[in-house]
Length: 510
Ligand code: HEM
Image (cartoon, rainbow, N blue to C red; front, side, top):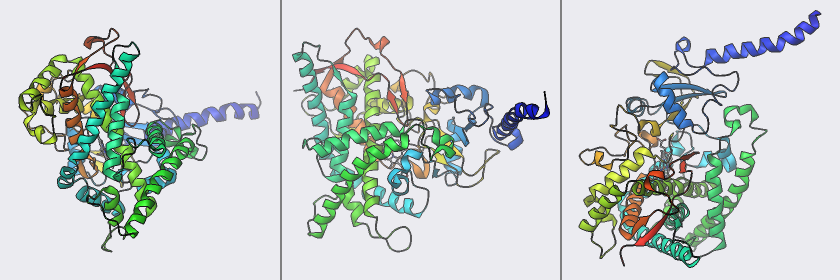
């Protein structure tokens, strides 16, 4: 072998070896004072070690590496928090350095990340937007004023369920209904009423339907793993076409939402006022004090925030309701107990309403138990460290992606007795809430970036589950029994049910 041939064969091998040593040195371990984690492969790191269900794989890795896990996802340093104690330390003592967001490439389309609340960097724009939305829109007073809209959308949902059951029977079927789409429609329609004072679905407008379909696709695209997020030098190539597909669907939603915004601006210019301010009014009426943040929110910014609220609120709420009802059908004694409570407190002569919730402790326990086992966003929204930070004895460099595995935390055997069983009773004599103060139950996150729609989601999930239990008895069909119900998950940004819930509703109240 001459020296040139030797060089040709040995050079690539040496390069791979060097890359391997370099990656290994940069992966977890005491040498760099990083938290522990599995050794990664050159370049791709642990990208292919996590499988289809990363939240479950990470949960299993906890046994070997402990509650703080270090991963290298492609070139992205990643820290995963997997116990209530570590989550408490993060949110109570290190919330600010961890308050940035890691933005997926797909959500840079139309500058979504720079205008939306949830993807924005932690800074004056985010702070002002967050303050306005939470203090002027999601406040209790405003939420109380809009109970009629939630009742209207709940009534529609019950009606759709009855219609679908009737259609199934008319076609010779057992009256079985697939529920996920109806829950999503309810949540979407409610958001349209609250954000825009429009009935986008009831009015049968083509625009509403187009907006609805595209938002559904955007939710799906945002949860599809994208190699460009892990190997950023591939962004320009967009090898999986995720950004391009996102741009395509977003262009439709941006077009429709900006039309709604422009119409409202024209109404305002013509001096029209509405009795109840919706979110669009709140955003358009904002005027800064010149001290911090923008003086006005730009039209494109308002359009994106409106889109974001649909995107953040419709799917999370509807899958939580689907998981809740699934657990009730899988545990019929829990459904029976819930129905008995509602019958005792509310009766069968009137519909359950929001002011009943305080007197329905078992319902509250069912909702908590649903969120414990099925947090709609299992890894919360990825945070991003804004500076080098010392965290529980480790050095976490700036730009690290931080995932909080709420799914694993809800199953932590040190925090929960018999953690895999659905037992609402565990909450009956406890003061645990899911408001970000109890770190074993954090489906809405915690700290400064806790879910801004919490107050709304809290009301909707309680009201819908109570209504579904009060309005109907439920039967499974097609030979499915509580024991054989499919409980598999489908991982994305949200955790959907892999096989959608189907059941037969039997009317209980007139
Ligand atoms: C059951 C329903 C819901 C669940 C489980 C849920 C969960 C979450 C979670 C886990 C986060 C990230 C928190 C963190 O990083 O610590 C979040 C953020 C957010 N949620 Fe929700 N959410 C729900 C409903 C809603 C609704 C109804 C809306 C609005 C209509 C909404 C709007 C947002 C927004 C805008 C953010 C970003 C906040 C920020 O970064 O400052 N969510 N949500």
